[in-house]
Every structure is written in structure tokens, then in C-alpha cells.
Image 1 (cartoon, helix red, strand yellow):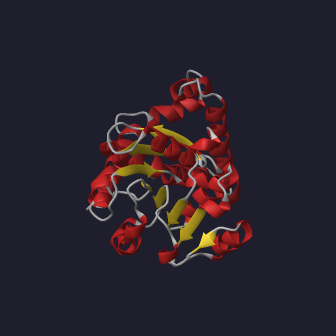
Image 2 (image 1 turned 90 degrees about the vertical axis):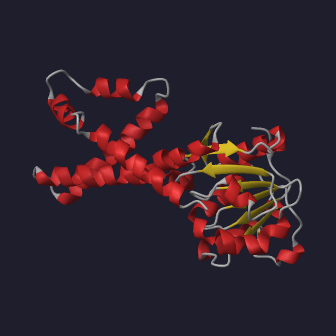
Image 3 (image 1 turned 30 degrees about the vertical axis):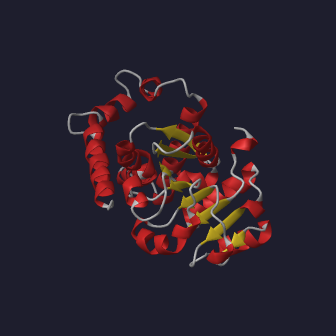
Length: 274
């Protein structure tokens, strides 16, 4: 990543948990605080303190702002109409709009803002610790240099996967955008199963959490080893793990349940558009 990929001016619209995590990542990456303005009428004390400490302009008068190189939309999807009324003058002919709103398509954004260069992205909550993953798609109006800028900004919070078809962003949302919740629920379920076989609740939860934390770190450190191979590495023929996997990998097991869950999330992402 080259410092020249970073924008000379950026306006962040919406600085809640995800927007705030992105802002911290950009500043850590080397984006000058004076280049950033954050707009959030419901700014948290954490955001207020961050902006004050780093010299980021928080909620400056809109009339004082010029169209930036990059405008990042990090508001809740249902707030797009209200936000667009105020920020439309900030979208210049050369402004790249990067949206992280679930379900809102490039068409939805173009119908409300005078934008021709749009990147639609879906990060996930591990961005808060710099270990997120973001799926992104670019409109036909995005120039190569603009895509490089978007890539640099998104990589400040973790990995980035570009998809050629915007329609796949709803699938990205269903897999990785919502995925941390699936993992957290799996921890809940594993801990509850531990309780059911006699473990004290606190020990069961610590075991479940540490198991998922360690397994994730192992996958991170062994990127060339498939998840299937890592599973096989744990599984001795006829052993305890194999007995459990006979249940999880049954015809009505975890794969089919996850397919239904991801399909439901993708449908809901589509319902949020418009």
C-alpha cells in the first residue's frame, strides 16, 4: 500500500462503531487528521475524545466543507434519505463515494446523491481490532486510482476481497458481514453443550471462547492449509472428534443449517434496498 493511495480529503458521514473503527484505522495508517471531517449528530463520547485528541474536525458546518476526494457513508441504511439531504452538495464531480450501508445498492445511492464513482463495501465488526474482512464492488465510474484509494482505506481495518458483480455484496453481507454473530452464537452453543455434560458454566464458557480464539489464530497463521485439512488434522478415526463430527456433518447437520442461515441473511439484505 502506497501513501499516495490515501486521499487528500475525506468526509466520514456516520461515525458509530464501524465508522469510528475505520477512522482510527485511517489515522493509524497515516491519513493526516486535518484531511478528515467526521459528521455524526449523535457522536459518542469516545468519538468526541478521539477527534479532539487527534485534531479531526467533528461536525463542522456543512457550508464550510468543499467536496472531498472521498466521502464515506457509514450511516444506518434507514438513515440514508435524511443524510442525503444534507450531504448532497459535498459530492463533487470527482468525489468517490464509499458506502458500507447494508442492503443499499449503488443505484439507491446514485438516486439520492450526484455520484458516478461508487464503491459499495461490507466490513465486519472485527474491524474494531484491525482484523476485519471487507467485501467490495466498484461501479463502472470508479477510476483505477479511486479503487486503489478505496482499497487502501478498507485495508486499514483488515483484509479486502473485491467482487466483480455488485449483486454478490448481499452474499458477502450474509457470510462475513453477519458472520461474527454466527461465530459468537456457536461459542454460546458450545458452552451450553459443555454445561449439559456437567461442566460449570464459567469453565464451559472459557473453554469455548479459548477454543474459537485459538482455532481462528491457527487458521490465520496457516493460510495455505484448507479448513477441511485443519479439521482432518484434529480428527482421529474412531475417536471423540469423529463421533461429534458424525452429528455435525449428518445430512441435516451444520452445513445445511448454515446454508439456511446465510440464505435468510441474504434475503434480508435485499429487502433493505430501495
